Image (cartoon, rainbow, N blue to C red; front, side, top):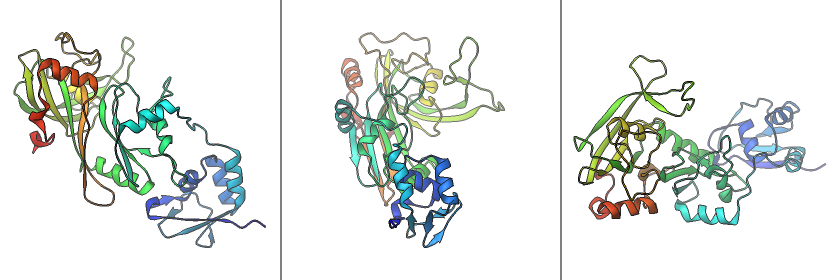
Length: 333
């Protein structure tokens, strides 16, 4: 008889449900097959047969898995597995800002989706298969950026790190700063934009990703706060604005700048009635410039992403000098 497969639960696995742990190790198995194997008693934890899929594993435990489980997984490759072209692999590796055993941080280029969806087969979540390992699979997305927004984007490389990073975002112990080229100049030059917003659609506008102003008390409304500071301006036609989202709502920064009468240059969805600036690329001029986040192993990790080419060109055209803003966090201290 073939010996069972021994799999230790490591610190990097964190505390995990048994079924999810097995799905990570054997991605070719469906949830139904995993539950069937558990009912048959083909998985032991520390020598005891465990039949409950929700059993919580802890670091230091050891699994003994019947070889039939691995054999079936090998015979059924995971659905949705991504094959990454050599060109896309080069692109992805060129984006990497920071990499260690717990996380990967990239400087996302504009125009590439973060996740898949209807009609979207090429996206960063899929391309991360380049960094997949046998133990934990591909890195997991921690937060999101719009397709046309560039800048800092974080992925967790193991379950414990992914959980810790996700908690940091939810608890708002991270600091995020975006740079934008805006139409016109916000007044006052430093302040806070706040209010209620919600996704809305109609027969004329079925786009459920479009945010609208909402009234307090609307059950679908979310309160949003953005701090901002004008770092430079080109007369009254354009400004370089640092933005700090205090809350993290869909399209928050784009919506807030349009509501303030100074929409972000190149934004075709959120407008303010001002004309676009001649000579600028027809792309969204919004960049996730910097992120400060607690590292899962301790200490703070500070990441700064270079501007994409179309925004560097805009800065040159409008006379904005980046040397005047060496510390992206300085406006919000």
